[in-house]
Length: 592
Image (tube, rainbow, N blue to C red; front, side, top):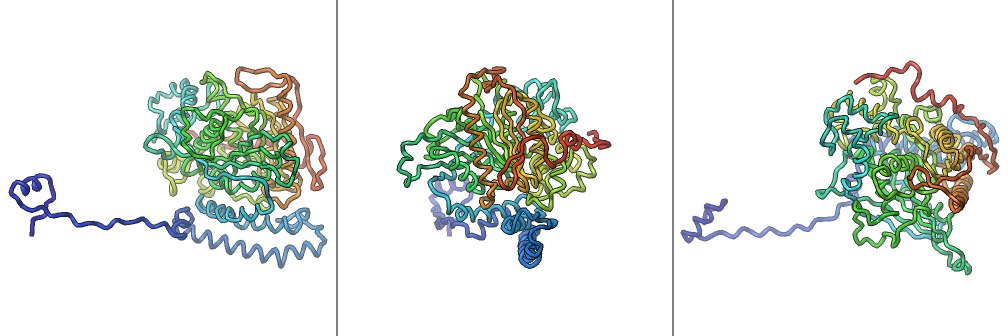
């Protein structure tokens, strides 16, 4: 039997002596099998630990218990009392269907332990989206449209704008966050009147060439083939850039497809919507999603930008979108991202680019999350009515012990710091104290809590804000509407407060007020864009529109019957008091 030859010298010696060289045995080629359904479900992250499985079991038990309680206790009680007595969880104005759906929503999202569990719930809900869209027609969906983004090229304007801020820190390599950040570095994220607030470096993963893939989907409203005159009507040129909600950790374009399709159809044939699947936390914490929003805006208005690589995908638009035709919109965390994009373009991009970007003339904010700490009364006092998962955030001005005592998984903490158990990064690997320092500083960043820390002047966009009296983010939306109007008296700002409606009630198509709100969005956008055709003047060279007429914030309360009451009078916490919840009296701020 010939010897086994394992190195080059032995092989050369055997060849010189005429020793036969054995042929390595043929290894049959392995054809990779497609993962089974069970494997795919595991890869979603829902079953990474036994605790996750217990969460799914607990959620199922909660849903079954909720259904039993509704059918045999609460709904019979409401019927017996003639729908005249409020219960702890269900106001009588909701009615049986509203009550039933809200209770199920609360049960399915109760007490999540990590982002993977919420994503599993949202994935299951997404399976039913086609059923919810059966009654819709005359639209097309191009899903999974994707393109590459070269991050370093995308961030060039940001780096130039932050050059002065970062030069004072003495850090030469800003390609990554320091493992042991100095007090000066952390303090650079705080708002300051004489410098631009610093931004941390991204903590997510990139491809070897420095790119990542950004996905999304296009929705288009089509002509009605049954309408003989549809071909003669002028088509809408509206392009909706919509950022979905989900607390920065879950949901997707597919999850919001039904709602965005209904809104696109309201704009009429020819209207289109692009919904990007921005990167989520904890894998890609702040500010990754804001960079994705910026890349999405470039994708529409400057597709030939050096940071974008579109490839040959047939889902891309065939033309450059005129910014004047874009309506910027979002709900919940997505509405916060829409605000952050406006601020990011104004402060971090425009000062460092020669060719200024023209900003969208219309912005729609639905249940906007503008205070990451959710410290205002509606966020802390509407748990029983609103379905949004609890908890959401921690006030950054409370002491460190309160931060530790708060449930470890909450949207704000995951968005700003990440999660050491799912996606470790330098913000959570330095110990509990360092994670607290990251959190309390980033929570005060103008792009994170704009209602309290951002300079809102110069956001030259007509803005419609919608919320409900049972929305946990009602105060976030109310206070932001007031401050935005005060800072931009030459722009139209309108707040619509829907009585007895919950968080993003537009999502629930069975509610009459949902369609009412979508129609109001279209009417507002059409009116605002019509105004931009009037004589305008540029301001500050930012490429944004500025009307000469001064305005006051429109404050409208919409009753369940659709009637409107104007004026700054509603049943919420007085606006003058909401500022006090950001920095509570007596709250101590620990030094680093």
